[in-house]
Structure formats: C-alpha cells, structure tokens
Length: 106
Image 1 (cartoon, rainbow, N blue to C red):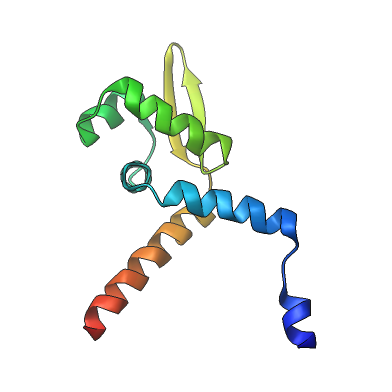
Image 2: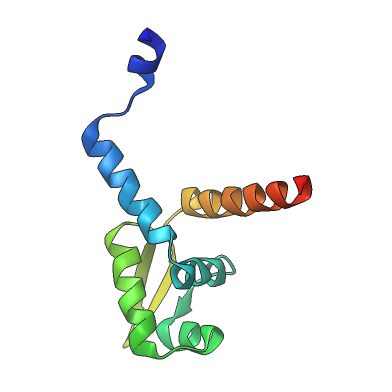
C-alpha cells in the first residue's frame, strides 16, 4: 500500500492529465495530430487534408493549443500549427502501438 501511495499523483495533476486524454478522445483532434506529425501546416492546409471547414479546424486547434498539445507560429497573415513537442508525438505513437498490439492478439 505504501508503494501505491507514493506512486499516486495529486488531484491537480490528475485533472490536467484527464483534460489531455479527453482532448485526445476526439477522432477529429487525433486526425489533426496525425496530420501535424508530418510537419507544420496552416489552417487552410489542415482543412483541405481533413476535408473540413477552416472554421471547424480552427475550433479544434484552439482547444489543442490551450492544452499545450500544439503550438502556432505566425508568418505574416498565415498561422502555422505544429505539435508542441516530442512528448505529444510519442503519446500519439504509443496509443497507435497499443491498438495495433491489441489487434494482433485477436
């Protein structure tokens, strides 16, 4: 029981982590993250790749940016988005590996 108590994360960190997992629970946001794995893209490019409106993509990007999953860079009037860091790429890839591993057991 002592080891479990030491491993237990505090309520604040658990809440923040739950927000990240909730954001990643949306298929559209996961598709945005998968597109951004190839490199930074502007909203118009993401909208074309995902076959969505720019408004819908912007809405999703706002949430991802607020949670620190993506970052933006402005170049003139165009805003480019990219994964915030390697941790996001790793989290996404680990999830993919997990579902692939689960499929191989079926």
